[in-house]
Image 1 (tube, rainbow, N blue to C red):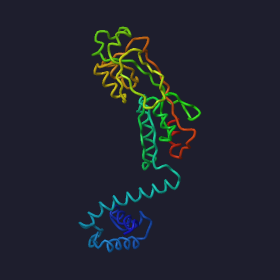
Image 2: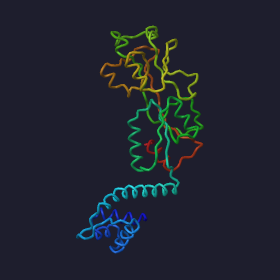
Image 3: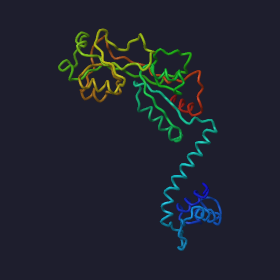
Image 4: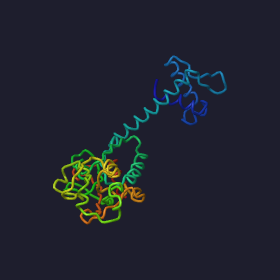
Length: 290
């Protein structure tokens, strides 16, 4: 049994006749008949009932067709993957995305890339503050979307990607009738500040919107931080794009306090200046750069 025989068999089924299949494959009808006959002989089973005007699958042929179709598609995928490797294209691309980054625009770009290269595996890692840049520097990912946190610019190619506003908020459950009023730092210190911990040591010694002297709860995911704050168990800064609906609906209230005012962070597209990219990594970089 050969891949050519499988392809011929599938095309005859798809086209409904040997004549139509020969035209589709640009091969002679006798050559197709011989290929299918050899396939049947090799399997020891009759795949087509040829007593009718058009070839009709036997019961065995119908069962074989389902398996053959899967096998053929897998084989063609493997063949394409091999050609991709031969061209020097990476079998997988790894990227790191900071939790501050709006994800919808990123997914739109990944959708375009994936449609062009469906056989390329994407590894997507979510990091906090310096974690994304850390992975680039270690060669664990080809590119990252990250805020500027302790970056040695000599080690990175860097492009400005977007800007994110961090909004200090609390639940209406927590501040009650104080919504809209200025809240003193002493009042805020009665409740824990919810902080997402850096997934790298890059921000060591730096604080981002942290209120000195306040109790702290530390978490590793921005989504968990948001849930805790909505539940009224604490307060903290959350990217505005993540809470626009909750702010509009009054579930979350922007805190008015000069020590923890909203703050904007520039988000950068990063790649290593020391580890060269392959052709697909370069293509993805260019898609993000537009």
